[in-house]
Image 1 (spheres, rainbow, N blue to C red):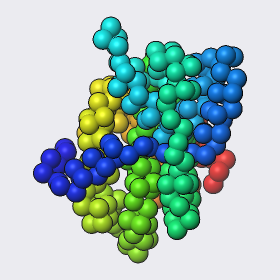
Image 2: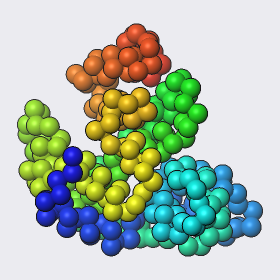
Image 3: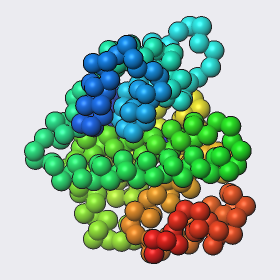
Amino acid sequence: MLKKDNKKLSVWVDKLTKVEIPVLKQTARKLSDLSSDIEHQTPRSIAQVIKSDPLMIVKLTRYLQAHKHSTQEHEIVEVEQAIMMIGPENVLKKVPINPLVEDVLGQDYMSALVYLLKVIQRAKVAANYAFEWAVRLHDLHFEEIRIAALLHDIAEILMWCFSPKEMLMIRTLQAQDKTLRSHQAQEQVLGFALHDLQLALAIKWRLPELLIHLIDDEYRYQQRVRNVFLAVNLARHSANGWDDAALPDDYAEIGNLLHLKPEEVIAIVGADKKT
C-alpha cells in the first residue's frame, strides 16, 4: 500500500512530475532520423523505436493522457495504438526527444549510467518473457503484458537518472549485506521503497488504470499480473548469473503459472544452455 504520509515520497513525486523525462541517446538519434523522413513513417516504424526505451514509452503515454480526446472510450496501453491516436507526425514533432539521459547524469555519474542501462536491459528481457508466456496462456492482450513488464521498474530507472548518488549508496549497502532486501535498502537511503514511488507516480500522471494494475505487485496472484511479476523476477535474478539461488523458486512458480514442470521451464527460458 502507498504510504500517503511519506513527505520524502511526495517530494520525489512532485519533482519527477515537473522535470522533463530524459531518453536514451540512441532513441533520440533514431527518432530524429525518422523525423527527417516523416512523410514515410508509419505507427509501426515509430513504435519499434519507442518500445526499445521504457523512458520514451512513459513520455508517449503521459502525452497521450494529457491530450486525450473526450470521445476516447477505452484506455490505451499499447505503443502502436497510442501513436495512431496521437498521429505519427504529432508524435515525432510534439513528444520531446530531449534531454538525453547522458546529459542529465553528467560526467560525475557516468558509473550510474552503466547500472541504468543494465536495468533497462533487464526490463527488455522481462518484457520478452512476459510476452511469450502471455501467448502461451492465450492472453489476447499480450502486447499490454509486454509494456507492463517493460515499465515495471520505471521508478528505478528514473531514480538512476535523477538521484544517482543515492542509488549508488543502495547498491553499496546491498553489496555489503547480501541479506538486505532491496526495499529495505531503498527505505534506509531514500526514505521510501521504489515500488511505492512507482505507484504514486502512475496515479499522479494518470496513467491508464490497466497499466497501473499490471505493475502493482499487490495483485500478483491474478494471472496477468503474476505473469509480469514472475517475468520481472526471472530477469532480475538471472541477471546475477544463472546460478542465482533464487532461480529454482522462480522456475517452480513459473511452472505453476504455465502448467509446466520446473525442468520444462528451464528449457523454454534457455537456462539449460547458459549454465
